[in-house]
Image (cartoon, rainbow, N blue to C red; front, side, top):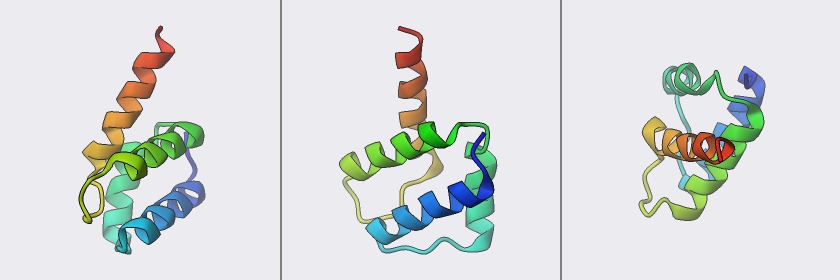
Length: 77
């Protein structure tokens, strides 16, 4: 499980890349959705989103979850 501190650092990094600072309310929503994953899994998913997200908008939780689900599938191989 990712800690709130680790999560906040990752989201700040995404915010730098996509030029968007999340509000406390938005950060809480993202954390609630992603908190059960490990730091390493969320970090890898964020890196994947940074490499492939084609829009200037901040990625939705679903964009990050897509990478987490791919990662889960890879572990099963």
